[in-house]
Amino acid sequence: MLKIAGLIKSFGALRALDSVSIEVAAGAIHGIIGPNGSGKTTLFNCITGLLKPDSGTVHLADRDITGQRADLIAGMGIRRTFQAGKLVPSLTVLENVMAGVNDSVGKAAVDTFLRLPFVASRRERDIESRARRALAVTGLEASADRWSADLVWTERQLVQIARALVSDPKILLLDEPASGMGRKETEKVEEIIRVVREGGVTVVVVSHDVKMLMNLSDTVTVLNFGQKIAEGSPEAIQKDPRVLEAYLGAE
Ligand SMILES: Nc1ncnc2c1ncn2[C@@H]1O[C@H](COP(=O)(O)OP(=O)(O)OP(=O)(O)O)[C@@H](O)[C@H]1O
Ligand SMILES: [Mg+2]
Image 1 (cartoon, rainbow, N blue to C red):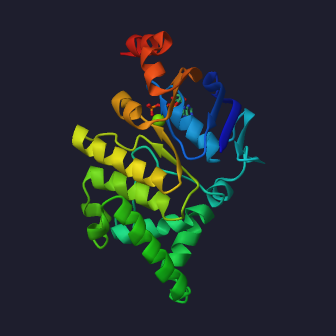
Image 2 (image 1 turned 90 degrees about the vertical axis):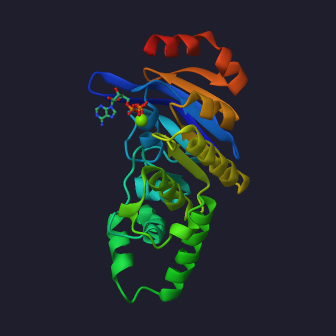
């Protein structure tokens, strides 16, 4: 479904991604773990077109999407959330989720869409009902009309997921979706991710939370200093000496 081959990305002398290759199977939940600064977010940025890799390729099914524009990649069905991502505080929860439709065509279009009264109302109603469905997946349907500024941290994280879901993505990339959450809230996020996958979406999850990723993932990739140091089933990864070393060395 998603094939990353030999991806390299440097920032000056720092190699944030050092020839990383990962294959994400269709319908999978694929976890990516690694210590701080190991290149997880940079990987997402290279996949989604926010950064151009120095070399290597990214394929979506058979299509080479390497270095394409972010809006085009989003339009092909790869959607993401941002680590500690922000919502527009002056919009309601529902409006924030609806605006996710336009993430594929950039910020200007969001403004145009939300402000111009002559935008086809049918399209708007359609987007609204999709946004309400996405909110229902994250358990926030009753919060649709609240102001985003009034949400607590956990709710904001969930709205981000709903916002990424509103366009029916093929692949959802989640960057630390449960950061700053307690165990109970994290389990809720795990459950949401499972429901999303049941709906036919392939999910790639970046997390520091080893327990969460081991619970959730079909396959786990471990990054350390920009390199893939291990990959396999959660059971195999937990016993892998390279992984134990990377984590023990880092903490
Ligand atoms: N735009 C940038 N310019 C310069 N250096 C960067 C940039 N983005 C990331 N880096 C560096 O690249 C390395 C990888 O960063 P990245 O954000 O991908 O790590 P991460 O695994 O997501 O870390 P974390 O767990 O803290 O989110 C880090 O050393 C970081 O400082
Ligand atoms: Mg990161």
